[in-house]
Length: 203
Image (cartoon, rainbow, N blue to C red; front, side, top):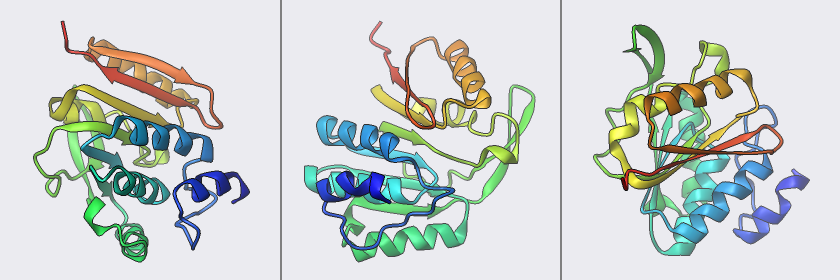
């Protein structure tokens, strides 16, 4: 918890936070996405999974007086737990946490289990944070994010992929770059690795 201290003070999240050692994003990844949100002030933020990231990004939107977080969470208990923290910090205006059960989608001839998108509103996404679903579910578990959401991304969207040091995530990034040539990729050496991809459709 000590590694989160600076962020908690920066965002005035000094009561309990939804932290679990095995599942919460590392502090250095959170620092990257928090700084981006505060500086770029995205209007629509979508994240794959929920928890500490949801709370911190919602607080950023409150500080900005702008923007909203939409979180896709396959675990019903996890979704409700995150909602409790959003309510506790009175951030309901800045975050919606959806229980989005995993459903089967077929992409390029392969089946994947991925979040249901039924609850996600029709909005242009300016920031996308990918920290789920869990890698143990299937190979390249997070690959569907871009094939399914790409057409919803703004022309200057920034995408953040956590756990990017893992072999699956490295392969996912390469698959994305082949499929979507407009992606520009930067790898940041964090505790678990962070891939930052920007959409550039300007040409």
